[in-house]
Image (cartoon, rainbow over all chains, first blue to last red; front, side, top):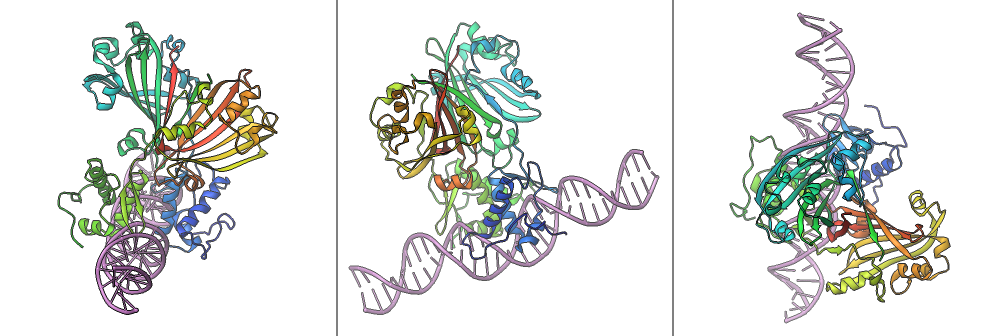
Length: 262
Length: 262
DNA sequence: CTCACCCACTCGTCTAGATACCTAAAGGAG
DNA sequence: CTCCTTTAGGTATCTAGACGAGTGGGTGAG
């Protein structure tokens, strides 16, 4: 095994209080930040770092696990450890639910993705009536059962978002909203056709680490948080007519809002 | 050492493909979710789990490190591993910059925290002129140098947010905005007094894992992401008069926005 | 009774292996 | 030329043990 190029990574400081595996992680992180290793590029193998620093393999792996936790690198079994590329992000503008965007035939997600030159896909359709959770019931105004619409959005084959819409049965049952494909303009267009003129939306945003189920559904790499967005749609009478619970891969999104100064 | 209460945690499945340390993590996670271990409660010690499952200590530690990465537990040296309590969250409403909130003497943060019965604190003041980064320069409309105002917000002694405001020098230099304490209503009140009537704000929201520096500044536990918010303030002439770059401990915040449906 | 000290228990770090499995490229059989 | 096998070099998992260092309770000296 050939040694690492000299100067690529420094030496350890045995007098430092900082644990060895942290020092190694620091040096790798700095090298990545400085561009010595580029996106997608392979880091030195565990064996090479064991050789270079004169430490045991567990120590090197410990360093890698720090960087993985920070979402900086990802390991591929049998291949190596690589600098994690930053995926293209999807920008959600604050006017994304404006009525004028609902006039067209296709869904906002499809239109937007095509404009960005990527390949969109929507799957995991599930539409069924179910018992409302405590939280959903509260948000919709004490309803017992709801229509739930679950779907997953993918960009270029990568899952980026998992969303569930909840609607009161007295609004949705027996309408196109209860169909797998609600038709052009989505359920918001159907709600307005049914006489529920939309007035405004409220969005609540949280960020947290994903549950194991979310890691699976969204194919999340280690160290990638999720953005949890709960949107409630209100009609002009002030009634909550829909709650949409969305979990997004945080590295794939930038949310954008406009606030009045008045 | 006394054995664990039987039934608290199950057994391993040696025929499973799932790695032993993942199985252990799964069982602990489930026990936490089911409330067998409550917030702040101590999990079994490494030695107890070694005994219970008949595995080596590194395997148990591996399990703990998974749960730490998920932000579910935190270890305290010399004491044990504990279920991480969910801190109280600060809700940021979409009208938080409404002009009416600027009339009072105290800052929004202080008022709000007092109302919630917690003890607010603002520190790490730094106000200085500096070179604008590429990003800040672009957002402010190609300015070279800016006034930067840095501060950190704490609730009940816990740092929750670190923010830097950037203002063009032609607006801020020589005004109260360049003072450590800009006076009642904050810099937005001063901007309006100086003739820059505010029209609206734009906020960009991202979520990601913190850098080591952010972990230090915000005293973040493992597995806690940050919300990165960049707000630009525009005056009625459409000029960007301020950019505020904020990094928040994600477990301490819920952001709330209102969107028009028109 | 008080206080300093000791000790048991805890997690933190590190070593030195063993075994398993994955990947990619080289080389041989057909 | 195609396909399979081999092999080298990766990471994944696990074991067994050593020493370090923080915490907190008990104990014995004063």
